[in-house]
Length: 572
Ligand code: ZN
Image 1 (cartoon, rainbow, N blue to C red):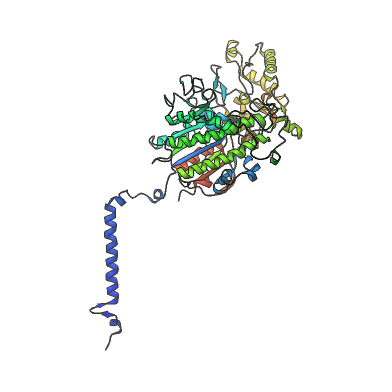
Image 2 (image 1 turned 90 degrees about the vertical axis):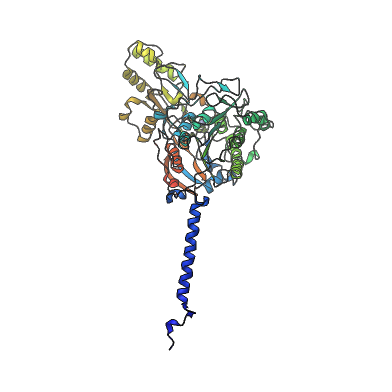
């Protein structure tokens, strides 16, 4: 009788036993192989927790700060941008459509300090591009440092350092976290646009010097320019860029997003007034070519320092300042401004292509933002019946007359100190002491006088801001901007659209209003997925976001929050 269960006999071994035998042998072989691999160099790395295993830090971070770039420029010129510049960031990267500055004043030094520290003037100490020291009455420039010397020029433009910045930057934290293996390089046409982002521990910062017609630095960083900087300067690339003057990229009549070229509210470009194309003579700052020069120099810096080629993450900060110089001269509605952005778009496209090639698009993280925006020109607003005016004509003179009547002391506010500096009132502290004056009373007199003046919406004694009847958002911006040692005690908030005397032509910035404080904020590359958010976020969120993405400590004065829309995804 044949047992059905034994039908599968092969010799003395059943089929199922035969399979089990081979399966067992297969697993044994795999186990032996695994043991071998663990013991060999292939698997020499210790086993790490799952969360870290998939984490791959970027090789390079590039922080682009487009000087005076209003958020709306992303879309105002959108149709005229190419595919690989701003549009690449919008289409491939993540855009925060409502990023705002959350302090006063909205100016360049403060913007750069706040982006890279995640902090505000009250804490980081950069209370303006300039400020008056409360105790000495001395006027300070934000990055001046007479203890340092210029490197690369006979001018004084290099006597600078980040020492007035009171806190660490995200770039400092990266250096610390990597035990100083990460390299940090800051570049700008402006000293402050290079120095503040590079932090206290930056490998280098370079800025443009008109006298030497080259990039220079300070003894704070080094005693001698690196060879590659000397070589770049000796190329006179600026002269090549400027040789043909400045003509528009496209025919003039295609600039339908801007006002007529001969608009009377435009100030001179390179001394030419009225500001009309073409410009036979231009300078590197007040033309789009300053951005071209900066980005070209940045490429040399990537090669010169081998950025993105190291084990540790490197950080390159770039301030593109020509947009600010052109913007100040001609305002946001000029063909000059539009053409500057269209050319910057092309320069960005070629810079991104360079990074793709050198670093690999998956390996670098780039973010783009601005230090502040800018107001419409006074004449433009007048023409279109928008509320505007000049708010500070003879203001200090008239305030001093009122204070003289009240106290018997002449010139309590130093007339040499422009009231437009941070829109604050700084008293002569020596006179207050000398005459034993009561600051509260003086403040009250100043506030009463200032608040009655046309074009001034609020004048606030900042020491009593808690009870001041002004909207919460503006109040918070004043508090964030108020540095006890470096800010004036009375803050002036002009009416929206009102301008200081010095910007009768062109434009300026510095206020709380959306035109000055609504900035672009885009991240692209590395692990960043495409997306867009309408949520209100702040300039102070940038540094803690980078800290989260890099898994390093936030700067020591940071008050921002990581942007959830892009920090969530790397925590898999
Ligand atoms: Zn600026």
